[in-house]
Length: 466
Ligand SMILES: *Cc1c(COP(=O)(O)O)cnc(C)c1O
Image (cartoon, rainbow, N blue to C red):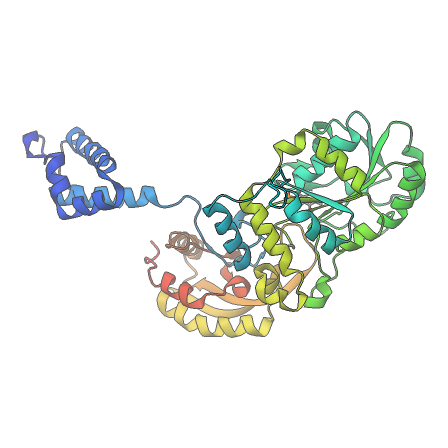
């Protein structure tokens, strides 16, 4: 810090022009443009004048460059997700497949036939790019796509149950993180929620008793993020489909994650697939694009042609539509499902979920000594067993046995503070590293770490924790 010089003549401060001519000043102009540099240098000079501080041309130029570098860094930054939660909503859920990235980039780079039928030169429909694939992969008659699954549920309710009753089991009145609460979505959709059964047990007769002339639909919701266990009873989707058909009302089934393949094939627990839900007789099935499916954010509605046609006539559909980049990425992602044998290799979500523990443990053994060297004597670094989660409310009780690195402060005194400082220092890296605190250790679950080299060169820039 420069001492204030109350007596110093302010003519001692350099001019903006002098700063722009300095080497760092020129570098700043090269990178950020003259007007941006002039603005930050003026600010810095004003601050120096206010504090009656002396400063130099080089210092001002270097500070301007540093400030502009900071300002130009994207707000949305890549991180290493070592939390152990593969589909972490706060970290962007599914990592997109290379094929999908390429397709999205191509869609951005030039004009594309988004709503244009190249065969007859007439207006086309954006859903046309995905309808066939979705029907092929789910066995449904028809399909449409909206912004996310919350939008899909809203649109289904608004289309089929506006001003009418929507019947739901009390055991399925879910809240999903981020203010998606079924009763509230119902009321915004203009549907009247009719709860049936109890929290733990709902029977066919409960649905029968609630059905009436004002019924718009029966809704079945996959309780994705919790399980009711013990003395329970629920009416299966297949039974509900029969009940709905007898009453001549549609059954909508919100699957949440909605996988397109049997996950048991990849060593994971079986999760009802979209094709199964369609086959069980739901008129409409809704599911997410960026959960187990492993694509970009999207909401899919598949099912009966007449119901999808009603949905497409709802003006709300227009407000919830997806853009060309996502349509391109979704198309490429869905096409990967045509080759289930190579799906694990190509789809990052599935690759990480199916990654064998031995492979993760080998990575941990390679990295532990290098991390220990980097952190120095203040921390103990050990390979550890840990459990990963799928995340995003998919299979909440299902954990995946995994391996990672446990980092503990060497000294017991001030251990909490040392750990907090370490997590902060890791977040301050060029590519922030996000782990989780468990048992007074920072645990880095390596399930989602595929780029060890990149991880190490990033870690090499670690500032010693304060
Ligand atoms: C996740 C989920 C939603 C919301 O899906 P988004 O794609 O996050 O909007 C709705 N219903 C269920 C059952 C879910 O699991």
